[in-house]
Length: 349
Figure (cartoon, rainbow, N blue to C red):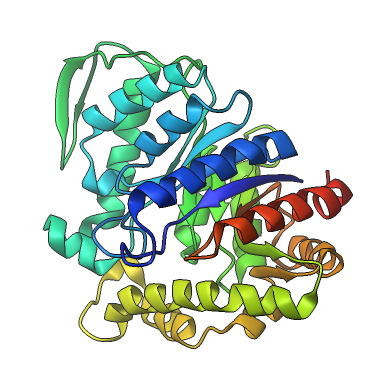
């Protein structure tokens, strides 16, 4: 198994100014590469403390490309629903060049009602826009002088520049949480999968992905990345004590923005998201540790947690861990990252 660093800002300007937050993220990622973490990835979200510090993951990864040499740089994920494919394809080609061909492109449908409302995009169009956008971006990266007449975007005889450094293009990931059709789509199309283990059916969903991969005739068995919160400390009690506030704040923010699915937001593209919102609202640290989605504890506890997660949710190929989630103090995040690399990761490499 490989391990990487995930950055998902859930922090307000009052808690940590943006310049401080990103300086800490870049320092963590730069050291993570030296410690053996194999990727860094960051999300695309807007407007609110939950994710809002990262409206463009490509900007952050471009900065990181100049401070690292080997780790993969992953958009986790960009949102075609809010981006024109011509613009996004060009930015992907540029970052692939700046990084020396180290870019992997994760794409997602988006799921936060307030973002759709502010961009004036109907949520019932999310899946269609996502599929069309991914198809058009793939076409623009792989070929020259291309045309595509889509429902939402069209172009004629276009060559996107810069051309990708990786041939024919960077690897694509599909982001998925609980919709079976998304897991099946990722496997059928031959894309890697990035998932968040919040569904009790995650193991079955991963099996759906791998079955679709094989049925489509792709070689191998696909590639699965799972995301986890991680905090490692020599003392079990202190691990929970230090992580509790930032962790709970993260989930309170998430529950707040997803809570619209329980009240005023209904969409055929987001079945059962009201149930997810209810589950998130009830999330608390101990239950998340017990369920395996939070790796928080001593090195011994986390070795057991990683092994258990691979059995419960997988098996999966990469773990993408949030190291400085919420407003976790920078020095504590650094110490956690170092301890995890020294005493947990070697067991699984």
